[in-house]
Length: 63
Image 1: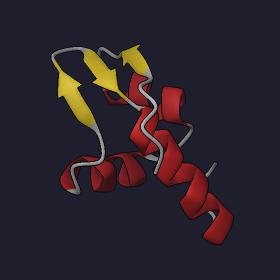
Image 2 (image 1 turned 120 degrees about the vertical axis):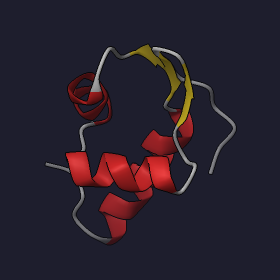
Image 3 (image 1 turned 180 degrees about the vertical axis):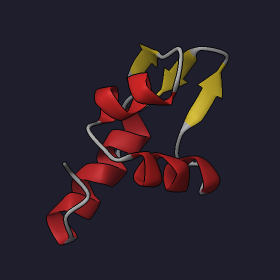
Image 4 (image 1 turned 180 degrees about the horizontal axis):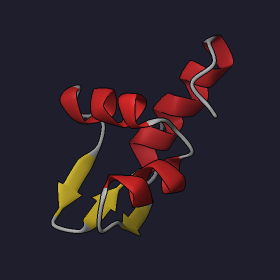
């Protein structure tokens, strides 16, 4: 994964799934594995986007 830092302000899970383009189940998996870091409503999504891009290439997580 790259060291890029992308941040979004997300009030709830719906905002995060829209920002990342993934399902709620994929979002939960990213949280559980520590790929997605939160600072209140500010989320660092760069590593999660990289992970999802790579996973989508290998499988089909994008919706």
